Image (cartoon, rainbow, N blue to C red; front, side):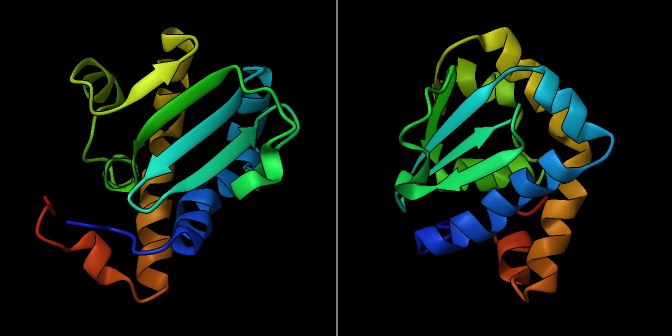
Length: 141
């Protein structure tokens, strides 16, 4: 299954959940305190997000090229989409080689744990946009 057919949708919906996270009054300060600048390098379709948690900013495409990420994750957009729907465990995906990482694995797992309350928001954003097919598709659980 291919979740997204273009990078603009990746930036809108997956990037949007990071914008929500950094702006959240409870979660934003915890993410900022992590000191992490996270680069997400997605394939199929190709898309790059850079999330500067300390500054609360999300960059798309080459906008974040000047930043020096201390964690970089590589995965397909399908895997990222399934993660944000709560269908993929981050530790398992890394252990199985579905996702690759450069940087601190403990920090990655801590960020992943902080993100769990955002799963319903991600699903709601897709449904609000009329993209139920991305939620109710063949891999829906």
